[in-house]
Length: 370
Image 1: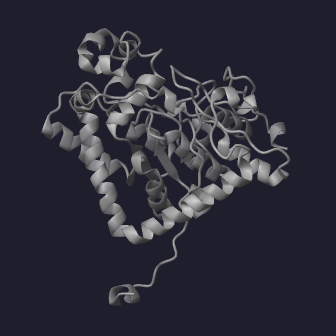
Image 2 (image 1 turned 60 degrees about the horizontal axis):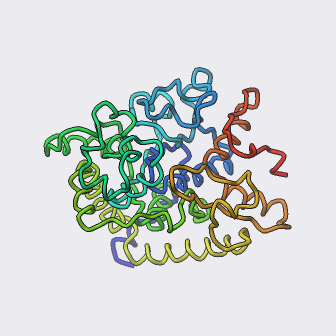
Image 3 (image 1 turned 45 degrees about the vertical axis):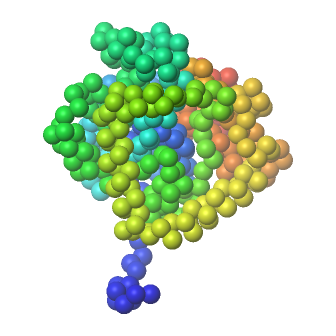
């Protein structure tokens, strides 16, 4: 140990339990949401869940406190907020305690746009009327029509939009710097989906959590056969077309690695990432009959079928038969898709309210827990 390290005893930290995660789109954020939900359940924390039949916190509307179930009654006593919302700090602060830890996740806009294209192919006009992602990017203005701006948010600078800003704003350096500064003021940590395991280790340190709090199975990913290959020209075009997202990503990708070097160090990071992967493999061996994610047609328990969208084949998992009750519960939670988990937590927290009608094959009920 260095002289400096010996002089400063490492202070024991306390796990943070008041946390706001801004869930961005197509950024591995469903996996993060699952981590947050499991943590909330493990420590009996209160989650700010979408009101009534909503599955998101009002998205794509700018967030308002009354989008949260029982906000009037519960007030500022929620611990965790992590469902999709469009960030609006003054309203979020009405819901979350003063000492809340704020974090979010970004992804390289190049794979992000391709992922959005496939996932939202049927619902976003700009995507629907173009043949494929490369045709769309060849002349986006041909498909991205002003009258459809509200429906086309996924087609341009979606991360910028999720953070509460205008995704059609002009790329002006002064404006961009002001937004980046504001995001830095509002968020303690911005993770990078392209380095997901490294992100989980950084999150673990920032929240003073244990390894098992951040271990995960990848959720809401799609089969490789639905990936559309971007041409080199398209790659270039995304950087220009989604220049706000590109600059946002580049800025926070740099600060992400800077933070790692300052707090953990690359050597320790590598060691902990390996621990995480070993633990993940262990749990996959315990929980999964196939040892990996399977296509929608191969998911045997339809209650664990993730929501399907666009032309993507969203993968899920099959659990082993004959798991003991405790293991089964752990495994079920690790593979439970976002909508089912949201609905399940809602019924636990608000048992007197009507269950969320998800239009999925079967609702998850607490009897399936036993």
